[in-house]
Picture 1 (cartoon, helix red, strand yellow):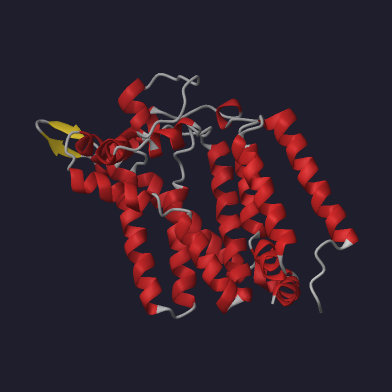
Picture 2 (cartoon, helix red, strand yellow):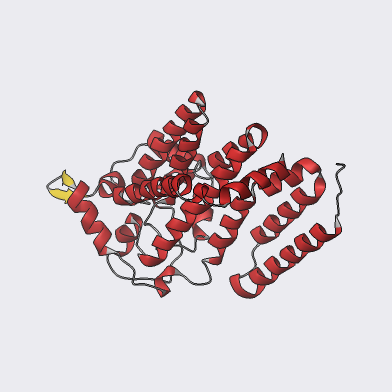
Length: 306
């Protein structure tokens, strides 16, 4: 079937969604430059060519994730439940603390005074992989196995939904917050790049500072979704029997887990709970969701984007 750039029904739906999105961000979320970029990219992908339209449809679950994540600014989790600052810290110290210079410290406290330029750069590079690597894998799957792409992208969305529920059920401060503010609650602060500031300083960039200054989820340390994404990616790499890719994903997984603690963005317990979200996602998706009508819906959707 020849490519129809502006089919009446689909064009009406796309422009309607784009308009609704901009109204939502303007009136409720707060309009930013990245909202224009997101809308423009979606429309460009849908209307440019048959291939780009299929790319857009294939990555729709990633787009839904972004919209939901951005919408969390409207109702911060600290307005829903009490913020836990001291409890995660005390639990981390009880489980993983050790004696250092005559005091019992958490791994984060140890890394706060024991850094190295090579480790600083590596931690930043690993931490930057948290979304680009899953997205790159998704684009590769677009050309190799579109049904697996849909399974992977829907699992990516699902692991985020699990994580977001925990964000609101148990708002928690990151290690850097305790380092800077102690156990007092202070809601009027931006995010902080913590140990990743060393990456910016060494390379002479403003990457992580700019990134975390815009972060609206200051009290969303539990679970560590940075730690969850690479495990889901690794699972699908293994499932696809791609040995080299799986090895790369494993290295990135371990690197991100280490960087999360080294940079003082997460406790080890946060990383463990992020991994638990991934395992729960895989089990729920494979053992429950695919046993329902969703499986046939995904088959029909895969046929559309082939």
